[in-house]
Length: 302
Image (cartoon, rainbow, N blue to C red; front, top):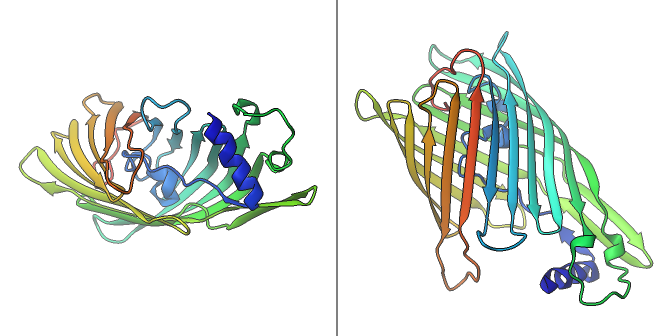
């Protein structure tokens, strides 16, 4: 890919670049711990794996992988582990963290979880994968280094059987990196991301729920993004949903919860071609979750 080399060269000449944005999962409810440490333990004890393949059919397109483990709530506290890897061509960026949440009982059916996330942001760039148009030495590329920076985040998550709502900043450290070599200065910044989530569970009968929900993301120097989903849940075993994002994508998803311990979901996102977009390839997403111990309590974020 010749254009990738030209892009990296241009960034090096400008001497200023920013880390890529964290990916937004369609199954953000099941991946909540990635965004909000306060959600740790709110869905019971489980281990889950998520995979998102964007721009279907395009070589070296974005690929995101997640792993989450949550313990049960004990003495009002729960801890977990979360891992996110987001790979785009030669760059692989991600977060690895330990999450802690403490539960406060607001009322008989409402709980407030407060959480903290501590770990690190990593970034690796494999320059050997570049299809270079020349073999001559490039001093700008010599400034490209792998790195790992500390990450600290906080969040709050309000939960009941009828609704959930959360706000969080998974990393509020505005980490900057600076390198100078042969008179060429390069800087990069990891910008804090702000997330807001909310959802409702509306009974439509004895065994049918309407579950609208949304994810809102804010990061400086990038457009705000909002994803809205509407799901129909049948007998707490099957969820069928559709969604829309303000970046001209529509989506459909299916989550099967018929087995006692295992949940499996598939999502498909389709881009709408507009006059302001040049590339709108489709995206596939998978989620697999195994629940340990007693089946998780049914609530607004199950």
